[in-house]
Image (tube, rainbow, N blue to C red):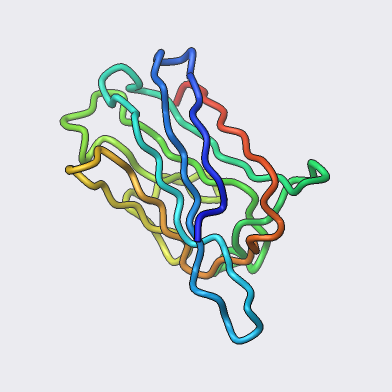
Length: 146
């Protein structure tokens, strides 16, 4: 089941980026949670030194928690994908920034990052999602220098 998707243009690196949200299978009560975020179209060389922050809002425009931090149990309402200042190649150029602001590379106990060479997409997988399908109304992607 897909939550929604969008195409965004970033002035930071003049790229069109496609963002897709995908859910878990329904649990025993039929509830589905945001499980993966697919980010496609980032050119690592043009976007070097850029961090992309994804935030999700419900239909009332209220910012939503995506997951609870495994260490602090605090709700986290963003996903941050950072592109290296001098990327070696597309597959290894990106890393995740955790809730404490630390670069965790390909992930930690909360989220993981993979790259699909066939599609050119980065996939962020949420380990223990708390955001339900019914609470996804819109999203933003902001870009800033690392």
